[in-house]
Image 1 (cartoon, one colour):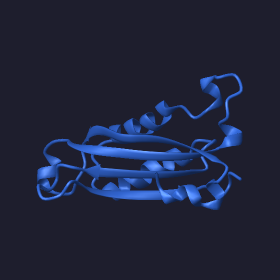
Image 2: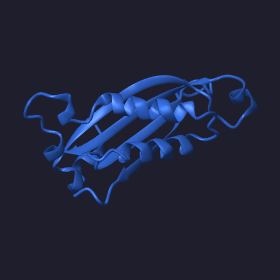
Image 3: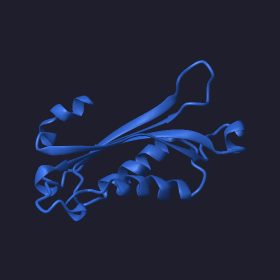
Length: 133
């Protein structure tokens, strides 16, 4: 749980999340990172107004589908090698906020296998749409 849930513009939102989604990605600036894909762990939170995500007929069409989150990640990775986690996070954030029901998103990436003396190195970015009430 993040502190974002106390943000006033998110008080009327449902929080959807994808946690610890591990994917092999061509990412990095170092030569050893360019020779093979490496594991990247994704965490995404989407904030969707309850008015746009409260099902009345128990239908998937009434909510934001978790497959949307995975699809945005997959499509970005498919575009080819990424130098920086910051670039990856920014691109994913833009993709998440492009969904017409998403008011805000938090995206983080972690590379757990880069350094042997730490659990991971990573990046996190948050965005809030001004145009969605």
